[in-house]
Length: 374
Image (cartoon, rainbow, N blue to C red; front, side, top):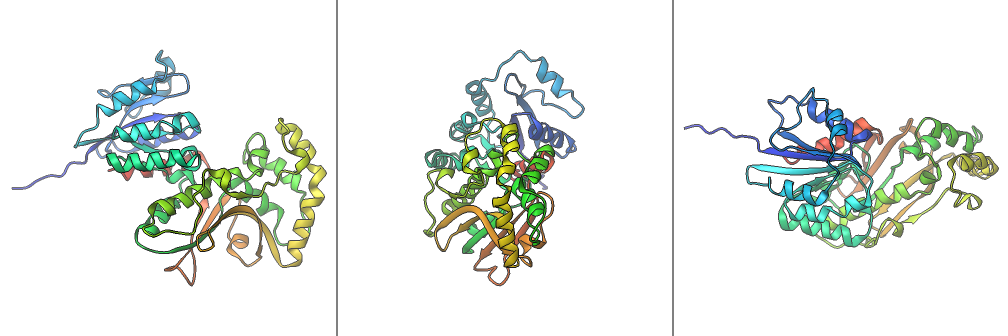
């Protein structure tokens, strides 16, 4: 007598169909239907939604037109009930949040309590208030539904999964350090090469903005908050997954991270990105001196994030590294690079490197998380 194992169906609802969300839908629908475990049954934008569990969205479907033609407005209470009704032993349900919304993030505990797994590149829930994060962890433990957030740090790079496996297998993480911001990576890879001189800091920021590497208002990158959020996520991944206590602080939110802002004091609070960029040249001499001083020591400047488990310190800021260090020699463009110093990787750290931003790789990280539910 032979038995055949069938792959459980996974119903998927996607919230947010912007750059990353649209790319995710295309990647999902590109999986051969004969082998795909996924059934894409719901799409929600900020103004419209569609839901049909009986007739999942198929490859070749004009899903954008179908969503645009819908007269249904998003109703997340209703969506929760609809998805919860589909949860069964032989079928799983996942909701993907591709937004950057705080309000959507607050819904995660309720989804998890109803057996709905949550997959997201949205950093808000995992780097915001500790109370929300603890509710997410506890709801997941109670229901068995999973929260997966690989793309919150390093887009599609295997950063979160690597850290989880290191912790789960009993390795002792000593320190994590890295260039976690694609924007900061681009700026300092071009600004500080080891030479004493080079292009003006403001000109590089301006070019980065034109190329779309920065937010419309560059201060939103230069304040270091994006890196602080990612460090908070890594810190909580260690503390919530570790069997033994660590010296790491219980971060109340990303605001608890020691973060060095690169925004000159006189430019703080300027509401316009255009005005900010136009005034930034006033401070080129300050940044040029930092570069000259680093060059005199045979070093480069890099904006890095550090989770020092041994010292109990979590910080983000400008640091100097030898011109022979991987942060100086291995980085190009807007790449991320993360070094894991652990007990097992004592002699040489484990390094993860590559594109840390972009719709295609971010969506790939989200899709990879969905496959972990299979």
